Image: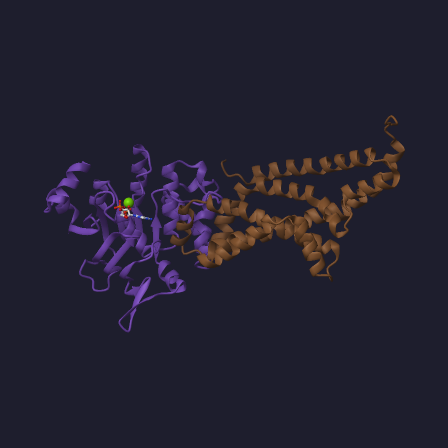
Amino acid sequence: MTEFEWNWATVWDVLPTLLGAFFQVTLVVTVVSTAIAAVLGLIIAMLRRSVPKPVDAVIKFAVDFIRMTPIVVQLLLVYYTFTNLSAMVCGIIVFGIHYSTYMAEVYRAGIDSVPAGQWEATTALSMSKGRTWRAVVIPQALRATVPALGNYAISMFKDTPFLIIIGLVELVNAGRIYGANTFNYTEPLTLVGIIFLAASYPTALLVGRLEKRLAFSY
Amino acid sequence: MPSATDNNPAILFEDVEKRFGDNVVLKDLNFSVAKGDRVTLIGPSGSGKTTILRLVMTLEELSGGYIYIEDDPLAYEKRDGKRVALREKHRNEIRKRIGMVFQQFNLFPNMTVMENIIEAPVHVLGMSKADAKAKAQGLLDQVGLADKANQHPLQLSGGQQQRVAIARALAMDPDILLLDEVTSALDPEIVGEVLAVLRQVAETTDITMLIVTHEMQFAKDVSNRVMMFDGGHIVEENTPEEMFSNPQEERTKQFLHAIV
Ligand SMILES: Nc1ncnc2c1ncn2[C@@H]1O[C@H](COP(=O)(O)OP(=O)(O)O)[C@@H](O)[C@H]1O
Ligand SMILES: [Mg+2]
């Protein structure tokens, strides 16, 4: 066994590849899928509050089904069913939908945390359903949900290596492939970890600040 | 002020029934409130006072019978001898004539005081923002909170929040105002400031009021009629002077004795 020695030449050699994979795949999928999950999750949560019980039961079943099936299975299923979709689009859609089911639960808890008196006040003021959601319920529900939504965005970020199953080389697999080709794993994978941390940490800070801004304890 | 014999009542209850599951809270309830009347509902806890107000505000679904607001059916109507539920759109039209102030204020904590007050005038009545703001400022003056427009509700005391809630309800120019124990959540020393505002509203407007309160002096000052409820039934009704000094029914005597 040879003694390990950190090699800076390897670092400079692999870094562009890793950053390329990070910005072109990991980051794009995470950002776009988070946006999709955040919006779709909210729509699901609002629907569940608004539809009759039997319809809600159907939505709940679909949501649970998606949430409880591994994302890898969903990636393969969608990728090989809709063969006209590029791997990138497929990845974005599957991640977006998969995480929307988690986010829907977070929103639901947030919506449930809005006191009944708030809804009653909107009725007493004859406010429309649309205004009730937009001006009263969602702003109050969001306040409670921002931390959890932020955490799901970060965990989606950490799930992106699964994209390799449909042939998308993101950050982790870019590092692994480089290692396989050059027999240097340590530098690329250490860099991978550092890039992950460098991206997660500011995200967590941002979520914290957003949480503060949405608070209304004053 | 119109008398109780007005044949076009502000509120009319006809054979009203309200059940929560198996619990029959109101049954065969009939009464009317004339335009401009100020009616105080009294009675022990659980006698159905809140339920009556909530039915008028359509916060509860009517189990049986009819409620009419200025002769318009509120939630159900008789059609060819059948009892037919009215659409949400219709209910919302009638609802616009009714305002309610709650025990817990229920101001929107995510909005400023000004935003709370102009929300419905702008988005429900279609008033311009400038007009709504001018009106809101006038109402804030009236309730003694002219300098609080840009505060958030949770920055205010309970009494101040309740006065904002009153201004918010008045901003819709309701024909009918429902007040459900609006001072019960307040510290005793703050109750007076809220009642003073309501006294002034009573004096300067002809809004029909349905009031649930334990403040007997306030009831005496503001209302022209008191109805005593027990178990969802009207035990007796009279002018406040008569009711408080000379109650006829044993149940009323007991109740009034217990609260003073
Ligand atoms: N949402 C509800 N679900 C079940 N029972 C209710 C509900 N609201 C009121 N009740 C019942 O209706 C009865 C009358 O209550 P309420 O109208 O609040 O009386 P009051 O305001 O006179 O104290 C009580 O027995 C109460 O338990
Ligand atoms: Mg009550």
